[in-house]
Length: 256
Image (cartoon, rainbow, N blue to C red; front, side, top):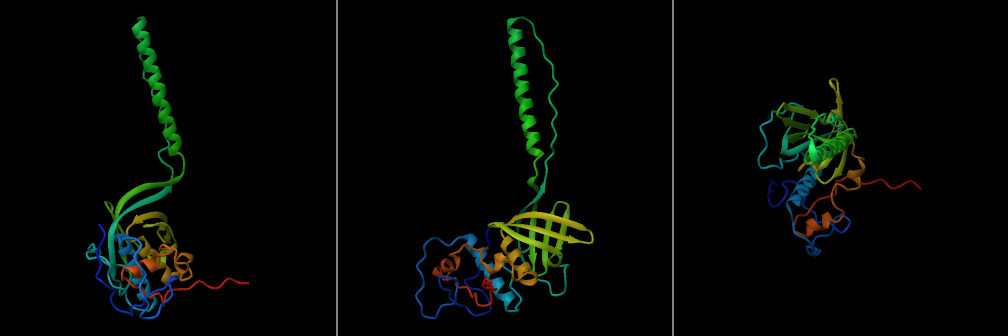
């Protein structure tokens, strides 16, 4: 379920943004809303507030009204910010097994022969389906690994499954890429090994922002603001949810 935020972010100056995300002057008329404000908009708005706070050197406020009681274990001053359901996927093959049915049936007479033909025809169809399924399993792609609870903190993420809770520090993450709304691919490694996961979760963009601000402020999805829709800042301002983009990273001018 989407969490409902307070009416305005806490701390920092509230600044209205113009059509390109630039800061506009006080007194300028608000744009008219063009579409309803949704739960996903609240997620983006809270994530934008976290981006502003962290870029200003302030500690961000929690964005979930309730957070799973996961013990912070990734560093001094760590603050838990959000919790939500998640789906974990891994790039791998499936079972890739094909076991054709070896059943045998034989009946005499016209009716029996017809039944025998129908039986073998049915077996051939089932074998074909199993073979096709095995061929599909042999293809590498993102496959469901587990349902999980994602907890996001200032220092990393925690993935809770039926097997336990796995903490991943931002310091151990080598790459994060937003692949769709609420979907990121994370590659991480430490002394125990490496992992590459696709995580589908409400707060996926928040993970991208927190990691990028600390370890890759030049991340193209951060400086290009492609983690939100192109007109989202205007959309937010139209509904009265102003965003201070002043401290956000800017894309560097292209070399001549």
